[in-house]
Image (cartoon, rainbow, N blue to C red; front, side, top):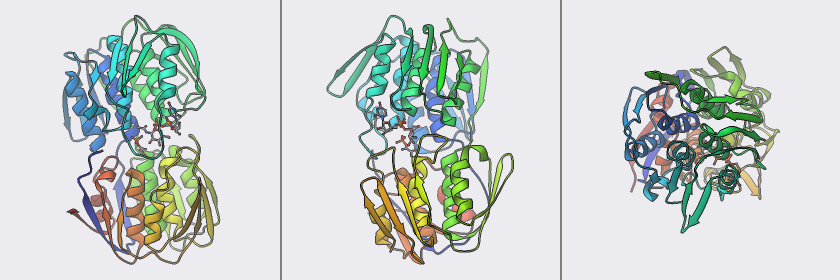
Length: 427
Ligand SMILES: CC(=O)N[C@H]1[C@@H](OP(=O)(O)OP(=O)(O)OC[C@H]2O[C@@H](n3ccc(=O)[nH]c3=O)[C@H](O)[C@@H]2O)O[C@H](CO)[C@@H](O)[C@@H]1O
Ligand SMILES: C=C(OP(=O)(O)O)C(=O)O
């Protein structure tokens, strides 16, 4: 990933007060934008976050030949003139979700080529073996050479695919590749994340026939063609990880905040953790109110899990919040092998955290101290912002660009809540 070395300077400690709007979900918007190439019709997608990964996805769509307009969180995609089926390395490397173009292009052209292993945060090996195995089970020929992956087929065959891991990306790729299959594709042990249900909701609006999204068994009945409505409109679901990050910031700093444009039911696991540690929380249909006055109570054992379990994408922000809680909190990371890169940075700020393999033992300290720290990935960077907001003194977060991949106007939102933050180009 290209790092421009911007830095964020945070003057702590902050008390967060006020209300902010949460943006649409990155991990729903990216597959939905990718899926928009399947139809000949124009699509309008709203509540799209204005983040770097969305901009990259739009660049790929334009490269493939689509006409795309992006304004005020709305994207108009016209893919009637799409002509390419290859994702060149410079685009494939940009983000993990570039791999989803494989499934979508296979449905569109019966051919697809990804000229590099997909990029994204370096939080583990992140192989794509399950995607490739599933493609083969669908009757797709896959050739791998020099990091390039080339796929072709005459027809995608109906088939039953058991995923040994409920991989989010593999589930999405199988769905995208199977829209026009011969018969029915059944995915067993499919991922249940709400972003997958949102992708399927969009595909069904286009005329696909998908049942079971949001459960462990997803069935895709092949259709001959999609609907020929003039314009299909889809609203992306709110970002539960962004919402969870802001909740962690309030838990770490104290204050009283209302988050708007959220689906509280997608946040059960983090809300449970924060309520158990002393935060006052009220939920309504699309809002969450959080108030934290006393020191956060630690002593919990938290394990990352597939949805509806506690999400790995919130592990880093939760580490920052519990770094200043009372007692000892234990966090086990079960999804990715290398997702504690924020810990040495938190330790520089005075946190008492020890990592042994997949377990972080957090001995809560009274207060962190601001200093210069380095973001190493998206959520780890967001966690350093949380730590900087709660810390005494000035925190400089280097490589703040990582955070721009997945958070819209993050410093503006914290500023709205009363924080003092500056962004500067780094050295
Ligand atoms: C763009 C997007 O939606 N990214 C999310 C997606 O990533 P992503 O789709 O990459 O995550 P997966 O669910 O596929 O990965 C889960 C686990 O399965 C492993 N695996 C995955 C595929 C494969 O072919 N082989 C294999 O071994 C991975 O290395 C990882 O250990 O889900 C993750 C888990 O909720 C989130 O952290 C990411 O934010
Ligand atoms: C890991 C993440 O993203 P990606 O899969 O795009 O790298 C994330 O959103 O936390």
